Image 1 (cartoon, rainbow, N blue to C red):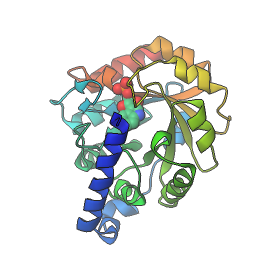
Image 2 (cartoon, helix red, strand yellow):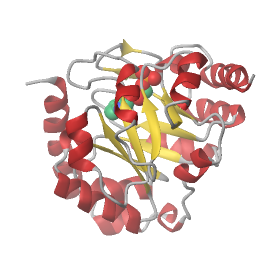
Image 3 (tube, rainbow, N blue to C red):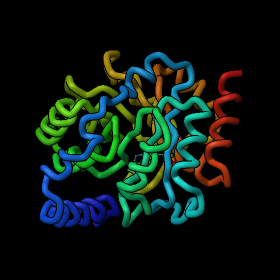
Image 4 (cartoon, rainbow, N blue to C red):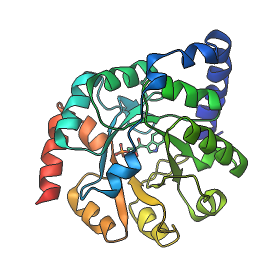
Amino acid sequence: MNILDQIVNDKRKEVTLKKSLIPINQLEASVLFERETISLAEKLRNSNTGIIAEHKRRSPSKSVINQKVSVSEVARGYEAAGVCGMSVLTDGKYFGGSLDDLLLARASVNIPLLRKEFIIDEYQLIEAKAYGADVILLIAAILDRKEIESLSKCAKSLGLDVLLEVHDEEELHKSIMPGLDMLGVNNRNLKTFEVSIETSKELSTLIPDEFIKVSESGISAVNPIKDLQSYGYKGFLIGENFMKTENPGQSAIDFIKELEK
Ligand SMILES: O=P(O)(O)OC[C@@H](O)[C@@H](O)c1c[nH]c2ccccc12
């Protein structure tokens, strides 16, 4: 069994357990459920930099990245840097995140927040909304076309933007459909952890223009971004490069300054 299968197996158990403990109507009673969301797709469309900065404590590929920083501080730093949005890992077992991280980020900033999670059930979309997310991620590698369709429909009905993540041509063809706001190409293979920016370049021409293109993972310098912009990419999801430093917010500030030069 590869790591992705393992994560999804655990996630199914987790969601079943949570459903039995916290009913949907309790989530819907959250004050945040009424909050008007901010569109990440819109921000990316109007930006020349397009950075989506991530909060990630650890990962299966790198183990510990940063266990010391406070989510609120990171969020405020990212906002000050002028990012288009922030991605918050909420998976606990493999990434050391939580829904409380999302909540703390929401309480700290006014930028679009992406719930970075292995979504397999509508319940997790209701959770995302209740904890202050604006955007959700759907991963083509773990969903079939029907599931992508129903989950994205449900997300849209909650006012959430949808970022669909693919890694190869097959996943792209399987999942391309209206109702997705952004198409993310993950440069990291979630099954083997291999990273190559070439993946984004190769898939770029296959993505129809109506979707905002986002390049994800393995970005640690501004030159690759300039390169990817010429392939039509408007969004760049960066985690480790900021999180591995002592002050991720400051790193994002320096990075975006450099990109704007
Ligand atoms: O830390 P990086 O290499 O900059 O990558 C960030 C982000 O793309 C990565 O965390 C990610 C992309 N897709 C995912 C799906 C699940 C968990 C994590 C991810």
